[in-house]
Amino acid sequence: MRLIEATSKLRTERGELIIEFSKKRYAKDKYEMEKQILKAKLLVEGKLAAKRTKFIKHKNKEKQYVINEVLIEKAKLLLRMRGYYTNIDSTILSNKDIITRYHDLWHVEQAFRIAKSDLASRPVFHYKNQAVRAHILICFTALMFSKFLEIKTKLPIRQIIDGIWNVTDAKLFNKVTSTTISLQSEITSKSKNIIDLLDKSLSY
Image 1 (spheres, one colour):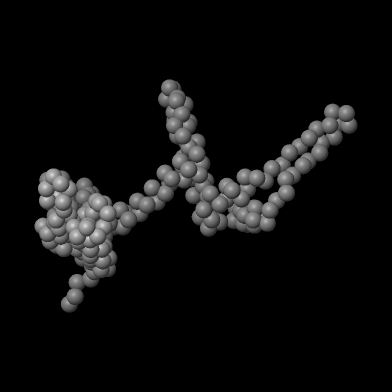
Image 2: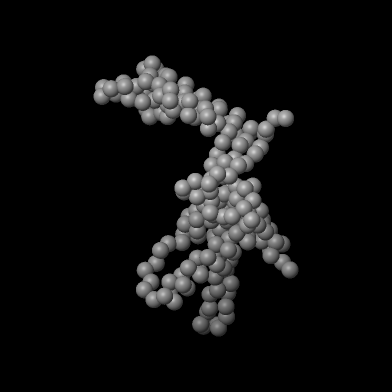
């Protein structure tokens, strides 16, 4: 029977270490390792500009390099393996669930990018506890609505913002005639498609 996927847990001084074995990762890691070894050999042979690569070490102070065979052997032993430290008991989450949660961390990183780049959230100097809480609440609410719109429309929030940002509507009041005139900017087809999609997605 060939081993394709498996996990194991070890108790260490730093906590419990989950080790994941993956045949798919083995192929990827082996390919990346061989690329790094080739770069190291080219550098040692002088066929590559002086550039830091993984599997080399200094031979002397004249910046001459040699292949780091010890590091290569260590890398070969670690092929197809990845480790995850955890303090969560297996009765709460299985090894597979913990690894899955780890792989979901990109959602958190994406949320930070959206908050900083697309929503332009920035630190504000508040000194009162209530003001600090209010600022955090506003930022979190904006992020929550952004994710809600992305889920509903299947569009990135940056595209939604760009599509509706230039759509303006102004009301001009004439004091002489006591009348109000409404002026609206021209809506591009791209903006209209996004607005229609929002209207359809948010209708109840």
